[in-house]
Length: 144
Image (tube, rainbow, N blue to C red; front, side):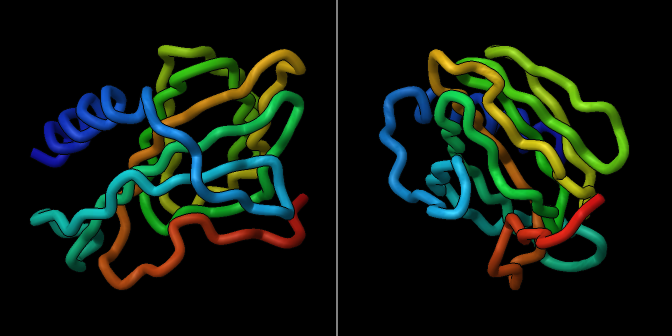
């Protein structure tokens, strides 16, 4: 049931996300993040009431985001461009428009980069988390 929910929301949001402008900018990094939806869901996550937050992330040419962790699992679709992802100690991977990836709860998202110098990277991310979570991307100051 949860998988059906995530897939359904992802399909709807991908359709809606194609036309929107990015609203928020994090001045300390190269990412623009816009919340598209934040909805309480019926399913529990680790025994607590859960919420699904959907964001559109835009990363400018050659830009990177800060290292961070998510309080729940993330399901991501690359809308436009290419994206380099490095989590935990795994090798950095590159994803292209139309591809998806998964980030486990609490993993260190150490690389978040647009490898192109020609155009933006745009992502849609669905993050599941407890309803009382106030931050879906928690910055990590120092990482190895």
